[in-house]
Length: 171
Image 1 (cartoon, one colour):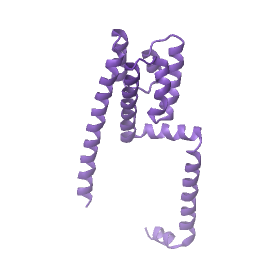
Image 2: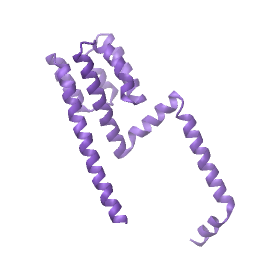
Image 3: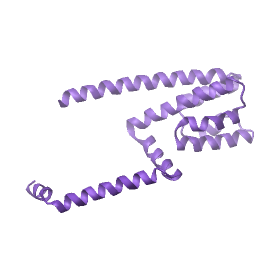
């Protein structure tokens, strides 16, 4: 503890630590401006324990809502997927959906390529499968969106309550 206090009182180590932190921050900002950097940061963001789960559910809700609206409007599924790509807000999900759109154009159903991505919730995949089999995909996608939106709202409320209790305990 004494050595730590002594090191903290010297300007050299503090300046090096500050410089290293500034370089790391600048490198992160520069990397996040490239397509590959955005993809890597998105992959990291989606893998975070609590935040990643919320982000994935939010992306799934947005995807379901928008795709359901487009399919209900009569837009062809592969064209609708192309429109939905930027709505996800996730380079990782957008890349996966590009592969799904390619599979659709080659004649596959929607469910198998979604399963192959490994990114989409099993509940969504099950609802899409039922929608495809019954010909009511335009009805099932909004129901999936409602489910995931309510799930995200509940998770945020729970997280807010936990953070509130933690702040009270700390203070």
